[in-house]
Every structure is written in C-alpha cells, then in structure tokens.
Length: 288
Image 1: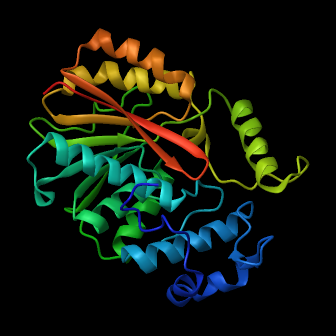
Image 2: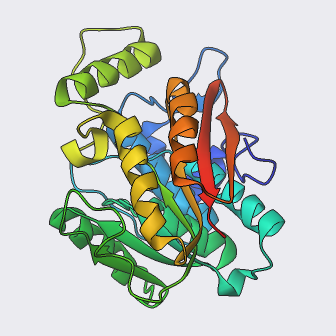
C-alpha cells in the first residue's frame, strides 16, 4: 500500500466497532486467532466500509442499494494518494485549487468522499444510471456536503465519457476512472465466481458480490473503455491537466501505451500500486 495509506498496517477493529457498533456482529477469528470478517459476505464488507468511512474519513452516513458495487476503501484510497503524488510532482497546484472529475462515480461515490476528506479537494462525479445518482446525492445530503464541493452530473450518452459532462472553459486538475472490467455479463459472472472461490475455497456458492451491468462490464471491456477515453480526451486537452484511469489487467498496459502514441500527449506514466498480494496500476497522460 501507499506509505500514507491509513490502513497500511491493517484494521483496528476496536476503533472501527466504536465508530460503527453494528460491525461487531460480523467479526470472526482467522486461522491464527485474529479478528477479521468474512470478505465473501457482502453485508460484512458493507459494514466494514461504513466503519472505515466513519472512523477515518468523517463520513457519518454511507449506504448502498442492494446489489450494487461495494468498493474496498484501502485500495480506493491508494488511487487518491497516488494522484496526490502525481499532482505534487508535476504541478504547482495547492489542494484548495484542485478539482477532480470522477468518471462513473457510482452509487458509492467513494473517490470524491475520500479525496474531499483527505485533501479538501473539490469533485464532480459523472454517472449514467439514475438510481446510482439518487443514492450518491442522498449520501452527500446526509453528510451535509455541498454540491459546490462535490457535484454529481448525469451522463446521458453511453457512448460519451467527457462530452456532456465537462463544461466550456471548465478546468480539472485530474480525472480518474475505475472502468468496467469485463467484456460481457457472462465474463463478469465467471470473474465473481473466481473471486469467491479464492476467498472461500468453494466454487458452488451463491454470488453475492455487488455490481450492476454498467459497473462490471461494457462492450470490449476495460481496454475498449480506456481506448475510447483516450480518443475523447484530445477534445478536452485544455480542460483536464492529467487524465488517469485504473488498468486492472496487466495485459492491457502495452496495447494502451501503443494507442496512446496515436493521440500524442506531451507526457504519460504508468503508476504501479499494490494492496497485499494484489497488484494494480493506473495510466496517466497529459497534453499540457
């Protein structure tokens, strides 16, 4: 994990339970007798997220509609922290000047919540699904976060990423994105079964990982999504300083770098991250 990640040394369950007492009912012992939760249980993971957000990020209310994607807070914080490093190294912007665009912010609105809490950044979150927007707006209202601090905008076209979201002469220090990972519903189902088998050792179990179709898959998967994002970014090269996106699949890195050459940014980077044994990274490019 990032050196500044608040969760790099694991979870303090007494602190988390104090912040959110309902978490206590999900605590179990691992093989060496330490407190943990069953990470294959979506209710337990949601309770853990609620506790983390309340204990460390001053988010007193956070909720998801049933069946929606539940993001792991430590990994999401790593992306925010790595963008902070990128901006600190490459720009002269102060935190008070920074506004980010979260593409596909989802019902969980996790990145704007973390970025606003950690650094006071402003955010715009774009989202295509009305139910996700309603939930995200509800989270903001119940935490008394002004729309001027974190705004939500509806993307009306499934074929557009920046068009219809970024306004004329609007400037963002960065954009970020956790693109749909899979190419199809069937591919998403297979991925969820693999994840549960890795966590439980069982293959014949009910799928309970959250995620709706637009969260988990799109035609062409993450490669096609990021490629489209790269192509569309050319028209907004003066609106965004750093374009970034997570790249979950290592095999997509080289093809994306090759495609990046076609749009001719001034600079680009692959920034590696890691949470435990899981390796991840994001790609970043700028025309400025």
